[in-house]
Image 1 (tube, rainbow, N blue to C red):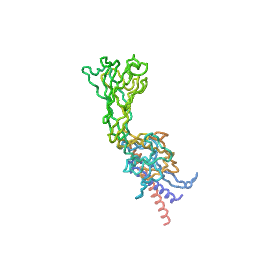
Image 2 (cartoon, rainbow, N blue to C red):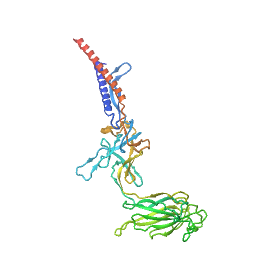
Image 3 (cartoon, rainbow, N blue to C red):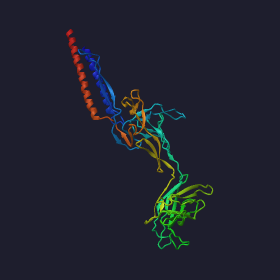
Image 4 (tube, rainbow, N blue to C red):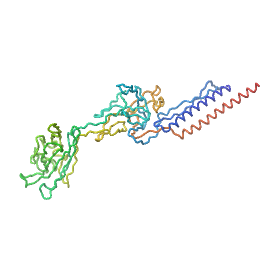
Length: 470
């Protein structure tokens, strides 16, 4: 062993500590970078020649140790598109696209996929979800009507929000759940007051709203009526604001627990339970109306009506079905003791809606919310996992590229197959621990000084040898 060998060894020690301090500097500088992953340093000794009786100094080599799989703390964020992964995995992203000037093809993305934990995404001016480093979030297409996900290999695409309008859907059915009080006064009796009409809003094919109303009045039993009304009966009158159709008026008779359907104006010898709908009979129904043809237990009690909501020059029809429940059952419209008419009126059909914002659930489903209260899912964000995530190649902007050592990305739905869940309005902080970095910095500084002392000592010894010659 020569003094020059010890000098070389000490220099390698200086270089190794310089590399360690460089990694520490990188960590400290990025302590507040979203999704940044810490870099540690591993020291490996170099052996040139060594046996039981002799050792030739070889020095030391510093290698980076990437902590890509170590999660940072999750903090609340303001935007719904700020995302964090709770658990293992990465977001799959595309690098910023190249756009040829004057090209009709528009935005063109590279075929290479990258990966990141940096989830500070926002919608850019083209509708894409882009993070603060400029990477474009990828997801699978979802059919908004069936919610079927297109998740074949290689089918993930940059997520672009362009569905800014929700087309209207015409109302086809209105379902009424109501109880008409059996102890209510009879219409025409002293002090009788008609109940407030039951109303619902329906929409035509253009999304225009129209108010449908049913006015109920208790008209029986009334032996004094001409002809006498022997069963407990209510009249119902349906109107639609804005239509040219006259009101459709009919009688609804309810079971008393002893009379048959036939005795109550219906069909059949079966006795409907007390308080349940037994029959619907026409009193003043337009030609466009369709009443139930049968009243057997369980038969749907529906009133069909085609309304004209246009003008003579531009007639527009709106076919509606009013569902009043089932004959002989305690669903829909019933008649039991109460102090007033209680009701719930639900209609399908949707008004035109405009874009309100984006929401993302824990499974990565990207939905667009509209002003009409509707929400449709268009994309699903997959989670990319690697067998050796610490072997990913680092890139600018807290992004990574797959390497032969890391293996290929395995894409899974969030919260499945070991993949983490997605948290919306949340960001993952850097996984750097400042206190730990300062401790490592102090150690590196002292070791660096110690190696420099070895060089000083070697220099003094060499000077002694040179002085011997003099």
